[in-house]
Length: 175
Image (cartoon, rainbow, N blue to C red; front, top):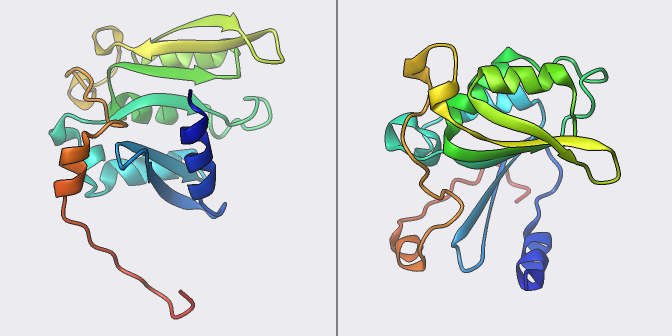
């Protein structure tokens, strides 16, 4: 049943260049934000941006995280407190998280920032981490963490999507 969405996603997948890429599909009701490049720089850039969907005052944020940053031993600069804190700041209560790693330092780091995670059976491996965000269990500066419930960022009703004003800026003669 997801085959048509899969095909549309693949047809619109961006060129693998560093930066923030947004793919709108399913009649503009699904919005996928891909960050290619350094995860911490990309996430902090989203928090600092004027994009409405990532502005903490708007009570919207990320609905699902999938962390694909290789094993912590191979990529130690990714798996740190700054990443987990930024994720918490961009999450709503109930936001899901999954990662192929099951390393205890990652589990403890996510838990300290409000993610309830557990080991589950992995894909082509023994274990992986899955869970959700619960700001009531987070440690750290409470004013920096999201307290409101989820607003399904990935789903925008067709009427609302059609009524939004759109604009574009093109830089570079090659386009």
